[in-house]
Length: 256
Image 1 (cartoon, helix red, strand yellow):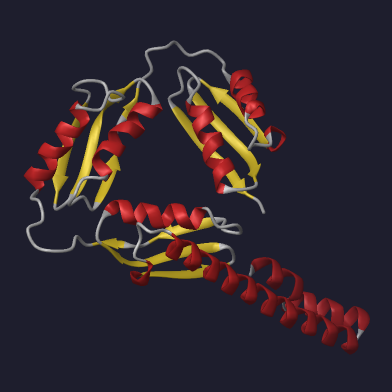
Image 2: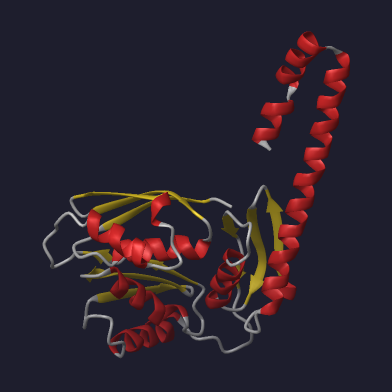
């Protein structure tokens, strides 16, 4: 609680005592205790809200997922049977109002006997990539080790990179996906700051006035604040949609 420590810490207490006397110091300490109880109550409510959202998802077994809350930061722990369940739990937590950050420490441990081998997963991954129309033909390489999949290659657009990961993450036996695909646009870079800002203004779910856009040689920097994780993700997607973008630097804060 950095802000609380700054307001009610020993230095502040000393200043109050020497300036206003012992009664003012007592009132300051009472205020500190009330604030601490309020913050703890907020964290407890936030944890309960996240647990309720996890239980609301029919695709998740929330009984094996633990949740802690600390100053609007959620930590997810426990064990699930598939990587997609781990990411679904993270997405559920992001939907809860009041969550500013998430640490996803859930462990993926496939259930049951007869789990696919790494070779099975690699063959299924290549087949899935081959049949996805958003993934350029023969653009992605796949490496599998103990269920952990790494994909590499070059594509023109960020949505193609996401499509490649989507092909992999739903496969049985996958524990995690490391997406090392590189964006190498075929379109020449032009300053797209104005275009990205216009895309923000067109979006009914975004407040473009709170987001600052800077660009430099294919790199987009977003800063400012958004009111939810949904708004945050839509801002990132909109920036990636501009032609010639190589990277998006995300400095957006989720401000409640």
